Image 1 (cartoon, helix red, strand yellow):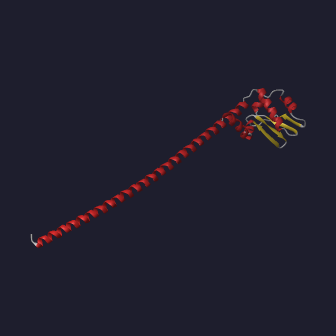
Image 2 (image 1 turned 45 degrees about the vertical axis):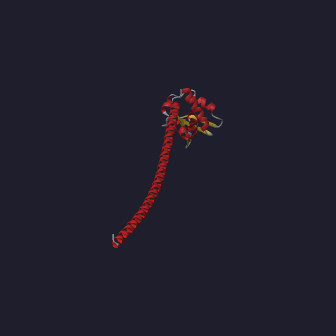
Image 3 (image 1 turned 120 degrees about the horizontal axis):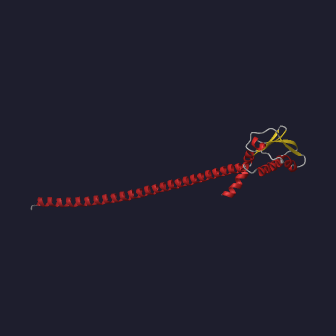
Length: 195
């Protein structure tokens, strides 16, 4: 080999060595960049998974809260329905009391609502027709001194009970009005028994 060929060969060897070193460095940099990219991707994926888990947990909590609220609403509606039905049944039971008990109750109510002076009691047509003969006498004995009430010839369009009139003043002592006016009190009693 002559000198020129040797120099050329030497240059080629040096060039090949430099190229290998450049390739090795490039490969090393590429692997490092790839490792960084994988780490960044893994970190971003972990962040995204954590955010998704957090969002799913929040949605589940919201769903459970909404379900609990709906259950409470259904329970409240059911209790209100039961209370309303029980009040209606109690009112119907009062209207269906045997004659003596029913008119005994009317006497007690009249005593509670009577005013000074002379008033008149108006029953509905059904109750007036079944009024016991001794009702006026029982009422007179039960009323305190200075308070009087007589059974009117007129009737009132009420479900049961009576209207108590003193001139222009009228006390609605119908069974419906008593249950309406004392509803909260009755509901408390029923609630205590049922719930």
